[in-house]
Amino acid sequence: MTTLIEPDAVPPQRTQELWCALFADTAYVLPIEDEGEHCYGIFASDGTPLAVAPSRALAIAVIRKNDMRPADAH
Image: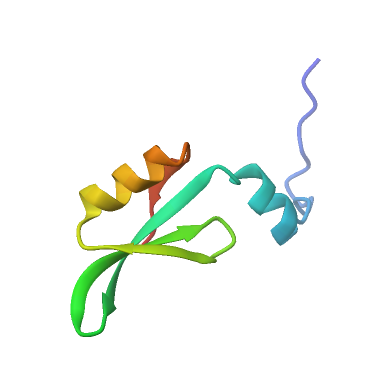
């Protein structure tokens, strides 16, 4: 039996810890500027900076090499 959610029901709040746990194996790639040069930052799911790479392709390769899933951040 399927239970429908009431239209006025407030969805449960997700804490940052739960959100980070769901995506613990995901690292995000974000274009950044470092010392005046365009490059790509690699960030953990909680926003912690992990590394900087000169290209998006290298950033994704580094993430995969460390057994994580790459994702783009905007």
